Image (cartoon, rainbow, N blue to C red; front, side):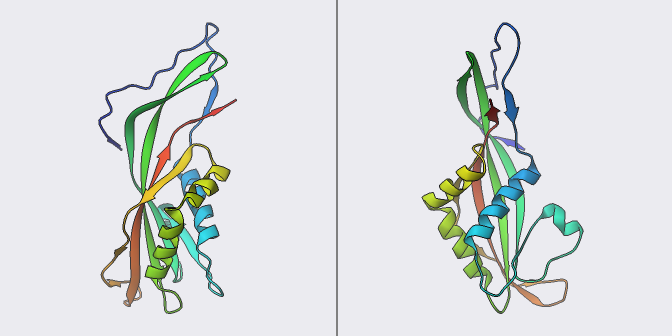
Length: 178
């Protein structure tokens, strides 16, 4: 975890009785699930089954092509605090920026470039914000960088693979559960 200019602290002021509102913090698995749900809505391929895996699912086996691999590459703590007042209690929550590397593996039916461009186009539009708002209030899409066409990679089957990648950035903060 990297801290970006984080000079402020996470502070909470409690009421006299000491009760705090409950906070929900997403774990890695939940983050992967949210991004998978979004990709399943935006990357539609006719007559082709697309597998979306994350780093932990590779311990089982490498999926058939085409597939998309998700990897949380870094989490940056942001210096800005969001302050909420709930039941007279002032709560300041620290926000994080999540960088996720998304690898697209194509095949003869659909190229990795086509998969990556479809994701990038929809992710960088306001529509992505609306979609993620339906899933979680604490995980917000920000932007994605330019897609990178990877040089031909030699896969485990000793064949060259069609691969692209995109880094997508999200804002993550605890959600107050009332």
